[in-house]
Each structure stands twice: as structure tokens, then as C-alpha cells.
Length: 156
Figure 1 (cartoon, one colour):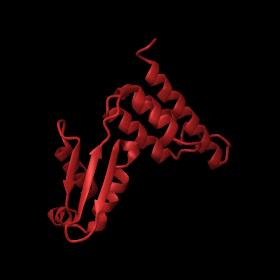
Figure 2 (cartoon, helix red, strand yellow):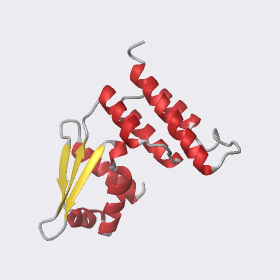
Figure 3 (tube, helix red, strand yellow):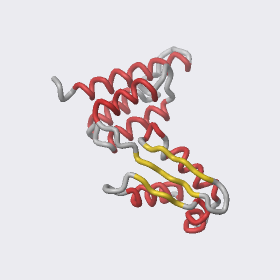
Figure 4 (cartoon, helix red, strand yellow):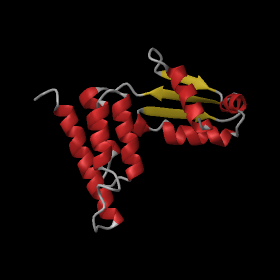
């Protein structure tokens, strides 16, 4: 297991089911894992972003800390946030995969739905003669449509 994966899992274990918030000291965490504090920053930026359902705040200095809060929006509110605020007009394949992983991890999409979404938005599926910008725009529209379908699957 890579150190980034270990740090991510450690933080997620601390958050747990009953605790939507955790406060950590960056230097202590880096010392625990035997890595540079910049590695902690990398994990926070790539694995605990708003698209994955987390907010992070940090205070630097002697008494500094990192606070990670799991956003507890669910159902239609979370879906609306993803479609309205998070996806935008263009979307990279990497960001799409992160959003899909968050949908699966949060239970908004089951593993089969997430797998189909992932496949439909892959570079292989979008291997058509379009510019990268057009592919990113198409990926964003497709994902928004899929998320709206997920939001409505219980209402049909």
C-alpha cells in the first residue's frame, strides 16, 4: 500500500461512522507516517476535496491544525450540489472518476451503477475525433445527466 493510501485510510478511519469531523496536527501526522508535511498536504488536496464530500481547513503555526469535515448532505441536496456547483461546463476524466467514487462510497450509487458510469466516461468510451475541450464538455454533460437519473431512480 502506498503512503498516500495509508494516510487516506488512517484519516477515514478516524472520521468513522459517528464522527463527521476530525482535527489533526500536520507535523504529528507526518512524523507518524515518516513523511514530509507536503505529503499530508497532497493527500488532503487529492483525497479530501469537496467533490469527494469533505471540507478541510487548516491553521499554520505552533498551535496549527488541520480540520477535516465530512459533508453530510445526502440524497437530492447532494446531487443538486454536484450538478450545480461541482461539475461545471467541462470535466476531466480524473475528476469524473473522483466524483463517481464519492457517489459509490456515500451510497448514492451502487457498485454496478458506478462501474457503468465510470466506463461511460472513460477515455476509451470518448475516443472520438473531438478536441480535448469538447470531450471534457461532453463528459460533464453526461455525468450531470447520470447524476440526475440517480437522483430520480427512487421516484420512478
